[in-house]
Image 1 (cartoon, helix red, strand yellow):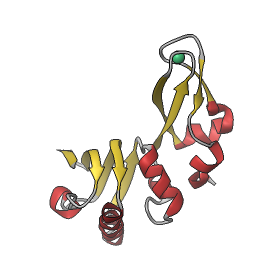
Image 2: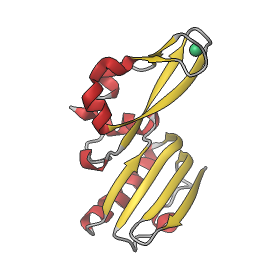
Image 3: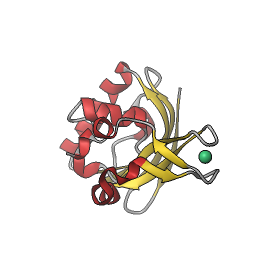
Length: 153
Ligand SMILES: [Zn+2]
């Protein structure tokens, strides 16, 4: 089940998606298509299934054909996998920021940190270690760096 929070701004539609993108998800019904720019915040998306992927591809393809500017923020691991797998899932100039998952052995905690594309390009694989948010230890990047960031190449 997906929940959608929409805020209409003067120049763009701001949308926050939370939950699973699956058969309950009808993008045109939820988001509409009558705008020139959309900012999509994906932090709360836990997973997407094949039905959700088809909906997603059709909907955003149509927006691009209509000349809508699309920006994606806080892209979580479930969506990063799709970007790496399906070339038109999100176009590279639509990626604004990405969530990187970390795990700390010191306090057995998972957390994620948001990076802009600029930061990722600048920092490169230096991001694989990060000071833990909860304890003095260093947390490690909890995916394979080269695989996770395939879309940056
Ligand atoms: Zn820790």
